[in-house]
Amino acid sequence: MMTQYKSKVDIVYEGLMEGIAEGAYQQGDRLVISQISKQWQVSDIPVREAVRRLESEGYVRIVANQGAVVCGFDRETLKNIFQIKGVLEGYATRLSIDYITPEILARLREMNEQMKEAFYAGDAKRCSELNRTFHLEMYRHLPNQELYHMICDLWKKWGITKTVFAVAPDSTEESLREHEEILRLIEEKQYDAVEQYVRKHKFRAGEGLTAKLSK
Image (cartoon, rainbow, N blue to C red):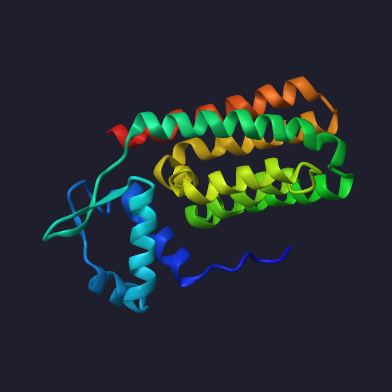
């Protein structure tokens, strides 16, 4: 599978998001453009764009005479996003059953095995990226591309949802087992069951992440 290209803005954005989620940047901390540029070995331009993206999503605010300051998380909003993702992705999985071939199913199982390997190797970042690819691969073949792109936009805009394995690693093994169950339900063409299962899978991930961020 082709690796998705990431711009400098995407790389810095994801790095900052991960730092906020894992507590490297605390509420009230300043994001100093020149320091971040040096850390990531890029010019100020992609850093400013990444910070603007974080501001638009509510993770930072611009304060007079201070610049970008970390806001922390609105846990209720984060919980709501996971609920929206659960509803949309559950429905998308239901629709995808008729378009997932045995070859695609085998590919999805291989991805889940790769996630296990990354988890046991302590590579939470790779595990998170594979998790995103795993879920989007299920919906990628839908004729309803509007639904697919809507889900992609949620994954992209709410990057914090990708950090669940890094922030709440104790939930990873359970998530991987749930992936196996999702694939079983797809293979058996259990439309109603898989929709409800994926919905609960997303809800549980959201509850686990918000609980960790509340500590």
